[in-house]
Image 1 (cartoon, one colour):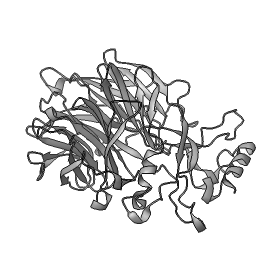
Image 2 (image 1 turned 45 degrees about the vertical axis):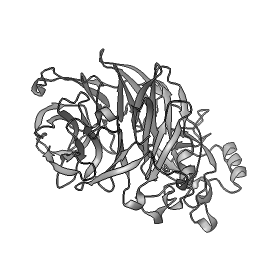
Image 3 (image 1 turned 90 degrees about the vertical axis):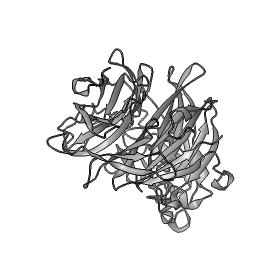
Image 4 (image 1 turned 135 degrees about the vertical axis):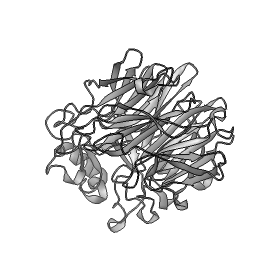
Length: 491
C-alpha cells in the first residue's frame, strides 16, 4: 500500500501556523477559548507560546509567556505543556533547570485568560511530560531523572499535584514518588537504578507511564499515591530494513526483509475506553541507550555467539557483521544473552518501529502494526526512513530506528475510537479507526515533508464538542520546522 492509494479525505488540512524558532514541540488546545499553547525553548526565549484559533484558516500568534525567572539558577528548557480538561482557563508546563542532574525541575501553572504565571511548584528531576487526570483533580509529571554520561545518576519519579477547588496555585499540594523496579525491567549494568519515566496517559485513577529506556510500563494509583506495578514489555520479531548500505556496491536500497527481534521501548502513550475495556496505545520509537552497531560487537562489547553467528552467515550469505548485512544496525549491548555466558545469542534492535495496542487490565498486547510504516513508505522512496526531512537522505535511518513512530493520540469521535499517529523520520501522518482493537483500520494517510513539514513530535485529537470550530480536529506539531498543522477529521 502506498501514499497514492489514499486520498487523505479523512485528514483534510484546514490551516497551519508557523511558530517562532524553538516552538512547536508539544501542544495543547483549549477549545472553549480557542487557544493553542505550545512549548518554546531556545536561546532567544523559553516559555510557552499562545495561538489564536478563532479562524483556523488564519491563526494568529497571541504572544509569549517567559519562564526564564521561574528557577533562580536558570532553565534549560520547557519540555511539556497541558491544559485543564475541564476548560477552567489554566494550563501547566514542565520546566527543566540548568544542571538538571543536580537540581529539581518545576511545574509552572499559568492562565490562558491573561497569559500570566499562577504558580510555580517543585517537581522531581528532569520533568519530561505533564498530564491532567480526565476529571481535572490531579496533574502528574513524568520526571525522567535522565542519565547523562559522567554525571550523578538522579532518580526517576512521578510528581503529583492536587488541583485546588479554588484554583489557588500558590497553595497547591504536591508529592514526588520515586519509581520502583521489578525483575525483567531493562537496566544498564553501570546504572542499575536508572528508571526513566517518559510519557503519561490517565484513565480514572490510574496513570500509565512509559519507561522508554527501560522497555517497561509503570502503573500508578493516583488516589493511593503509590506504584501498583511495573510491567516489562519484552520483545518480539519484526520485519525491517536493517542497513543504509544494503544495495548494489554498498549503496542505499529500500528493502524491508530482515526479521529481527526488537524491544518496543515506547515513547508516547495514549488510552481509550471501549466496550467496557481500557486500551493503551504506544508509539514504539526505540532509544539508543545501551546500543552498539553489530559490526562492532566483540570489540568493546559482547561478541556474537559462534553458533548464532554461523546461522546468520548462512541466512545472509556473507559475514553478518558486514555493512550490507547486519553490520550497520544499532542493537542492544545488554539484551540477548539468553544463556548467561557473556555473548549474544540473539540480536535485539532498539524499537519495533511500530505502534501497539495493549489491554490495560491484563497487560496483554492485542495488536502491533509490525512493518506497516516501512512497507507503506516503500512506494514513495523519498520518504523511506528519511533523515531531517531531506528527500536526498532516504534510507539513512534504516540502520538506526527507521521511521520512528513518535506523535500519537486517541479520542472517541463520532462514537468510534480514533488514533492519530505520526512518524518522526518518515514524516507520515496516519488516522486509524480502532473500533476493533485487534484489527485497527487505516482511514487516511498524508505526508507533509515536501510541504516543508518535518519531525512531528506531538499529536492531538479534539472531538467536536471540545473543538474551537465545533468539528472534530486533529493537530500535528512539527518540531523540526516549527509548524503546527490543523486537520478536520471528516467522516
